[in-house]
Length: 327
Image (cartoon, rainbow, N blue to C red; front, side, top):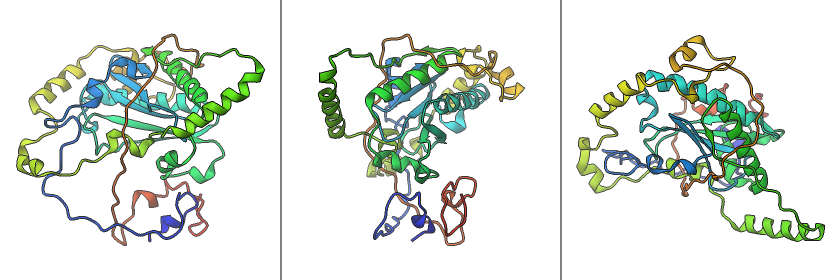
């Protein structure tokens, strides 16, 4: 077994076995948003998100999970990461920093992990995972696994966190679409019973975690996919060039504001607004955030003996494994 199975951050113990590696397929199946497959992100309305801007949208899972906050940043335009024109590429850096700061400002959050996989959906989506403060066992590359193992946080706390992040982003523009939970004024004698019923309902509901999200479910190859061959493509090159040209000349929007840490070139490219670190306030819209991810899990890949994987990268290895002597 690989050495990382002995790290304190590895979520499992006991007898484990490495899966047999399947033979490579001649043609990879299309992702959602490729070929004839519809794009979930393009068809989602704005009220499925907690914050929306002219060129970016932020959404959450459909219910609380084990981590304090899990959010997804998506571009409005149907493009993948490597297809972004310069304007959107510059804005992606600004939005990534801004959203990381907003999540890190929440109580009980120590770090924010930013991930991008993209094997299930061709529409750009970046994951933001908040690690709880003091939970050293959750440090490192296994945080997305722990999200589905830990008990979900309370829905009231989850909705309040969503509203705070949406309000933070709205300080730079766009529209916040998440509201904090309303206070239900009741007699003290009924609060205990209500709390017990809510906990029981939360336990029965199966929370969908990061690795179970629809965007990250790789589709199995079929005979039809193999027959299509080179005819199945992610994007039409002509329409892509038109989108890139249109994106490069698009006027500045509310989502391009700079920050104290941003380079001047990013501000010039995106038409930024004055930087600052706002204090999150209450959101003003009545819409609720909702997403509809579905279960799934990524496969296992075995690296050569002398190869260094992302899990063995000292920059990403937050484990305090005694055998490696690292933190």
